[in-house]
Structure formats: structure tokens, C-alpha cells
Length: 218
Image (cartoon, rainbow, N blue to C red):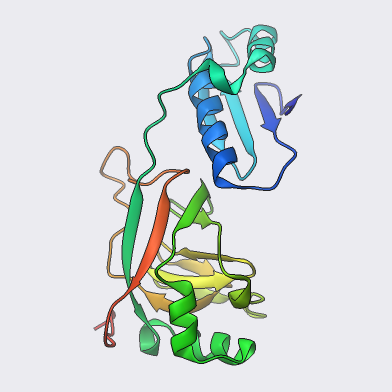
């Protein structure tokens, strides 16, 4: 574990190991611990890091830094238990315009892409890019696909896509350079709710194929 200043009112704690689910749970424990330190106002989880922010006026940075140095994973328990989310997906057709490209790139059939991509748990390592965008681990190596050479200006919300060694869902309309292989009708975020996103790092997501094709724009 490495701790260093990150600007004048924040610190970054980084772990020198690849992302994995057990590490994500340790990051959650560290976040819970950090939020209990007087003066800390926020703690954000990355793949292998936690960014801790404090009140620049009232907080004692030296005390906070020392408390973070003293943290041990066994010092605190009580994280919310991990939850498993199933997301229905219409693969291919107008909902997955890049499914055939991904299949051809890997010399397999579209059905094999669907079978490899679905029915497996993907751990959520962190949230970012846009509200509710979950960075997932565990995409089969067989499906690792370079991003599009020309990103789309608009990717429809609910699009399920592959980019490099990652897969995920676009929770809202946005630009994007990943290959769209399907789409879910599920609304993943609601800014009017608190919290606006139900899943958190440490949870798992499973994509469930829906039989037949449906144009979700119709």
C-alpha cells in the first residue's frame, strides 16, 4: 500500500497489484474507514486505489494522513454484502450492430460470442466515465477486441459493448468507442433517487440473453 498527497486537500492510497474482487472488498473497507476520519468529506474507489478528500478549511491533513497510514484491513468490518445483478440483453440486430464484427474478428459465430459473453459473473471494480458506468472484470480473453478506430458520436443508453479487455453497459446516451453487441431495456440509473445507482464496486453483473430480436428504438 502506497500513500501520497494528491493536491492540497486529498490523498491517494494505491495498491501495487492487479485488480481483483478481493482487492475491491479491501478498497471498500478502506473507504468505510476513511469516511469515519474527522474532516474527510469523500472517498472514491478506483481499480486499485482510493482517493480521500478532506475539508480544506477545517481538517487536519497530518492527522488524516497518519490515520490512513495506520489503517489495517482487519480494523473495520460492515461493508454492505455483495449483490448479484442480472441484466437482460437483446443481442445483435439493430440493438447490437457490432456483434458480427466481433464474431468475425475472433473467427467464431455470433452465437458463440453471445454464449461466451453471457451467463457469467462480472465483478464491478469501480464506477466512472458517466453516472452508473460500471467497469467490469472477467471478460473472456477470447472476446478481447480492440476499440473502434472511429468512435461513435452517440451510443444509445443501454448499449452493451466490448472495448479492449473490458465489457460494460452505457447507462446514458454518450459518445463511445466500444463495439456494441447488444442492448438492455433496463434503466440503470435514476438521478432523482438517492443513491442514483443501485450497484456498487464489489457487486457482480450477469448478462442474460433475451430470445428474439427487438428494436428498442421503436
